[in-house]
Image 1: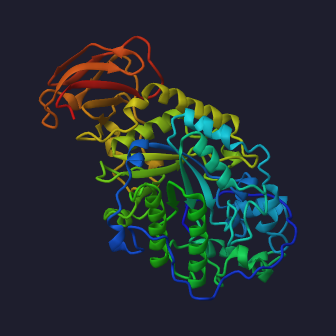
Image 2: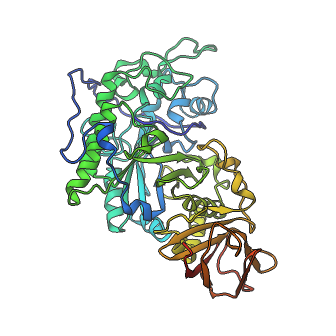
Length: 519
């Protein structure tokens, strides 16, 4: 079970055949049983975890945030908000489907048909755009498994598209030599989904409970008896039975699909159960790689990652400095789940490139979500955004992949804009311009990105001034990626570079510096 987007938007759909009732939660004791290996399910043992080289080198991944809520094409958190009287998604559901006391989220699942789903085509596009890893959703807060789940009847093989979405994406990732990742949003589902057990407070349906109270739907809607209309992101109110159920399902996912990365939409949940999931993931990987773990687990709680254990993930935000350990931003070009209202309002290629360069300069990776429509095929605006990223990476990726931070991440007017709350700060960030510079290194090579094209066709990299105490190296050659060698001089003002009359690409531009003691 996992936490997610603090957002909310809209909805739609119709009815699914009646399903045979299956008891929802095992009551027998469960001790977390995990694969043997170098790790135990304790924080002390997991301190020995080392982030694998592939993750540090990859820098850029693409995510398909896609599931039954995508059938509605009305944004994220639909399954929760459709049960909140007066919300935009509640009004949308009533208009298109009916009142949630008579028809509910379970009845919309059959509308997710995935009729144009072509994972091989999609991952071919993502590979061309420069992604080194790909992530599919495993289960969102709506408690629906996107794999052939042996512990949960509400899954994509039995319902909706009747396809093993996780398995098909894994096959395509292997074909295109992309690391394969899965996201888990499940831990908080009983609280998140508890709104389905409420009722309208006023109006013609006042007091009539929504369909979540029907015991035949208990294994879909969760075991919470309390309705959490004000959602707190903690484990209060989550039963031991649910924790055990979560452990069974996520272990099944790991054991059968062997992800290179498992993303947790929140902190490591449920202490013993959560830590055992990490140990199982890492031990499985070690068994395949000569005793050395090559898998990654992400947590949104910084403390989880500070002493080994896992990778820190920042939702829709950028950390304020160069972090000593690799970390990741996860963000989206629009809403997390597909939303027709955001078409034409996606992040631009420039915004994405600016984020990627800035994040990499601070020792981070970017995981970028392209939300898929109900059909499973990107819309034309998404394809246009992806094409812009592809063109930029074709010229500049040398300064991104397998790089490490320099002595400072950068300088310029926008460097102070990130010194705010880490998560959800992307909307408060200034647009980067030619006055902003970011740095990366690879071996003895220093890369300097200037984030806009100056009108004078000359750029001055001030941190590389000869009297700057932060660096003492000698610059012997400067090349502009996509063009070639360029003329330069250097003095107490900075490194002055003469630029060609034609830009080699759009957005950020990369200088490749070679010499002595530059890194």
